[in-house]
Image 1 (cartoon, helix red, strand yellow):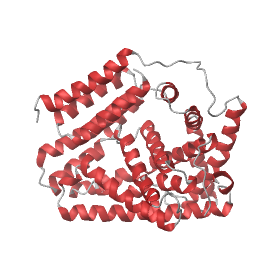
Image 2 (cartoon, rainbow over the protein chains, first blue to last red; image 1 turned 120 degrees about the horizontal axis):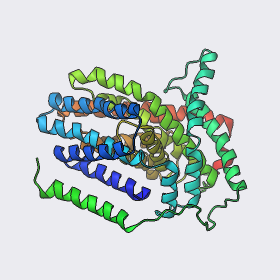
Image 3 (cartoon, helix red, strand yellow; image 1 turned 90 degrees about the vertical axis):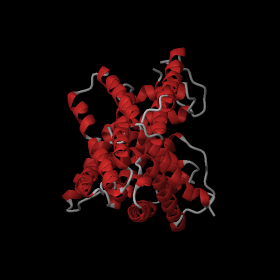
Length: 218
Length: 191
């Protein structure tokens, strides 16, 4: 499916189930998400994490409803299944799409200005470097007997300094490769929106409206 | 009053995205703290309070971006990109992270918008803290079912969130900006 439309669909589903309270629909969405996730053949560790990580907030919210409100079991179940629907629908989109495909689709199909598309892409490619930079900053702090926690301004300050440096270099590198802001571009890899992309988008949304409002499930 | 340019250039976009990713990674580091707090508070039914205690951490990127770039939309974009990164790293809220990112971004943007994007000082930062707390709390009343809680708990959660947001998105952001101002690095870039 077209990446832009896929993410649009995931967000619209998440938005709609935030405002509705039908736990069976949440469960069904989570299961459909799971099927798509399984087709993408994730690593076992990732799959196990996907099941356990949402468990903590899901249980917390459900228990809080049972103990701290009069809403009862049904609403607790709604919140519990809602979290799993969020995570599995979201992962069904993220695990089947690469960042570069998403960015290219946003540029070509959603008409995001190309300076944003390439800016995002360039920065996202530095993700592994950023993870190691955070570790380096913390290690450097530790060596000087200065523990940097997430509440230390120094940690963020140093991260921003590194970002300033890299953004300058990266922007120059992109410009050196012949990129100019606002100039018309041709695309090496064309990403199209096909008729079945629209069909999946509107078909899924129509089906969701039907089961949410047409079937009177509770 | 300095006049700030509202145009986005390639290096601004890259810088904003890099900062957002840094925050996304730092949020990811904070994840375990959230889990431990939630597990500890769940038996008494106060698990969601962990969300409010740490709220300030999740919403820092917005006001910081707004304050650094001084452009319309920078707070929203910074917060949203941070959320997208968190989702791709495998955050706990899945697809709803993107919605939360937009909600939090607009929430902190409102603080700057109310001053007409003219004031970038302690006042506008505090205004941003207030709008962030109110708007994100409204979203949690819907998404996480806060609306069902007893009034006492609801007020307590709101106060906790306000204090958390003030400490992280207010005091801490101010401290970071102060450090940056002393380097004079941002001045040549944003004006």
